[in-house]
Image 1 (spheres, rainbow, N blue to C red):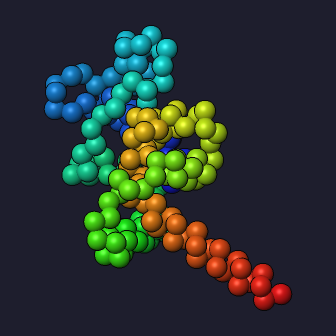
Image 2 (image 1 turned 30 degrees about the vertical axis):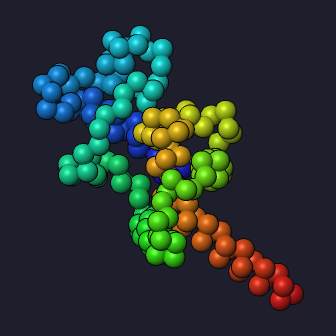
Length: 162
C-alpha cells in the first residue's frame, strides 16, 4: 500500500502470472503479447488483468513483498495494533465508520499523486480502482492517525522548547 515503487512490483507480478497462469491450463505468454491479444495494447495491463492473489503461494509472496523492509513490517504491526486498540476502546467500531474522503486524502498524500490520477494509481498497485483502495486502506487509518498525532506532538514539543 505504501511502497512508492509498488506499481513496478505489481507489473512484475502481472508478468509472472502471465508467464505462469494458474491451474486453468492456459498457455504462458509474455504479458505484452497477452495484452496485445486482449486489447491491442490500448490499455495498461493493470487496467485489464486483476488476478486473484494466493498468499499460500511462496512465489507470489516473494514477488509481492520483495520491496518490503523491516520498517514496513513494523508499521503494519503498529497499524494492526492501533486498529485493535480502537476496537477495544469503542465497542462496535468498524472500519466502515472510517470516512472515505479521509482515507482517500491519506492515500493521495502517501502515494503523492493528484486526485485525477487516483484510480490509475490504485490500479497500478493491484487495487483495481480508487474505491477498492479506499476500502482496503480503511483498516490502516487508525494507525496512520496515531502516527500523525505522535509526529505532531514531537514537533510541538521540540518547537515549544525553543
